[in-house]
Amino acid sequence: MYVCGPTVYDSPHLGHGRFSLVFDILRRYLLFTGLEVSYVSNITDIDDKIIERAAERGIDPAELAVTFEGVWWEAMDRLGVLRPDEVPHATAYVEQMVELVGRLVDRGVAYETSDGVYLSVAEVDGYGLLARQPLESLRAGARVEANEEKRSPLDFALWKKAKPGEPTWDAPWGAGRPGWHTECVVMSLDLLGDGFDLHGGAIDLIFPHHENERAQAVALGRPFAQHWVHNGWVTVDGEKMSKSLGNFTSLDDLLDRSDARAYRLLVLRAHYRSPIEVTPSTVAQAEDGLARLDALARRFDLGSPLDGSRYVVDGDRPVGLDAAAVDAFRERMDNDLDTPGALAGIFDLVRAANAALDAGDGDRARSQALTVAWLCAALGLSLRRDGDGDGSAVDPATAALVAERDRARAERDWARADELRQQLADGGWLVEDSAEGTRIRRP
Ligand SMILES: [Zn+2]
Image 1 (cartoon, protein in one colour):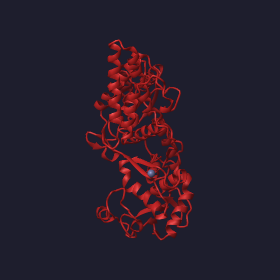
Image 2 (cartoon, rainbow, N blue to C red):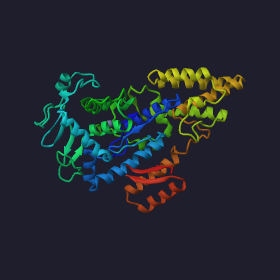
Image 3 (cartoon, helix red, strand yellow):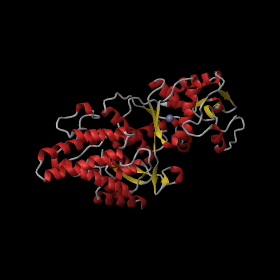
Image 4 (tube, helix red, strand yellow):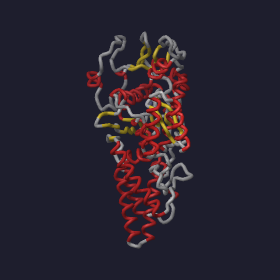
């Protein structure tokens, strides 16, 4: 699997959290079924946005990228997303990208302009396959651009010639840097080989990013991804979650204010292609679901099968599970990853286990409860016996200390702010100052 990773210039938002969870769940499920999975997800560590943001801060783009890559992995760890098997960084692949662009130029499908090298999409068979639109209608919908040297507004940059002050690499067309679409096609083919199985990303990557990755492979005559998987939007009050719309809420904000498992459960409740709403009320509903699962774990004193292992495999199934329920789960998941159906089955089993125990059928109840824990683990969800989860949920008294510290800081009462920091630290919290105010988390 190749899944397009983040461009590291800012903290991850909810949309990043969703795609990471969707593909973590898919990967875990494929492993559960006994398949071998090689999971590659890149870090785009050179890009217009990185250069702009670094310039705003007066720091080196590479330094900015390293900082936000650290922020990214920290958020992924909090979400319980397994680390990829390989994490290619774009800047480590520039030589191969220059080679690929050279081959496209040699084949006559790419051309040089004063500001870069472009792929001529008219030369690519089946351009528009992923967008599900023919070239003509894509062209009609394309923005008219100022760049008059481009043969078509759909042609895209394979190589961008350097502007003053930008990081550069040498190339036959002059120093510059690779285009984003070239990064992923090079890294995916290099690490997974021609005709690799599955390429994933969020829905907004279908066009132009994935279309353009595919176009380069097609233009080179190399078989590309066999299957494409794209996950739906994250919406807040019906609008697409994005910074440009101003409704940006960082993933850390969500994780600070809720049980980290709640976002996974919320994502599982929707089909991966459907949009999801992330609001305090949908997160609270997910936490209610977690509470029911944890209550079952307490009632039956169940540990999570995830403890001590990275994922679970159905072939290692413990004895005594409800085989029919596991079969039903697999049938649903095999049907285009029907996680809402699979989850509904798990909650039916929670009800059944509780009812069986109430009715005095302890053996049956225990088998059903064990099956719940096993299937949750297959989805990357651990059950907890202690009522306090991992202690990462913020209780009202702690929230009050945080609010008081923010007021103290706003009033420049540094002594009081320091006192409050110490009180929070005494409570076992790591305290950080951010642009939005005091941020706390468990170490
Ligand atoms: Zn990509």
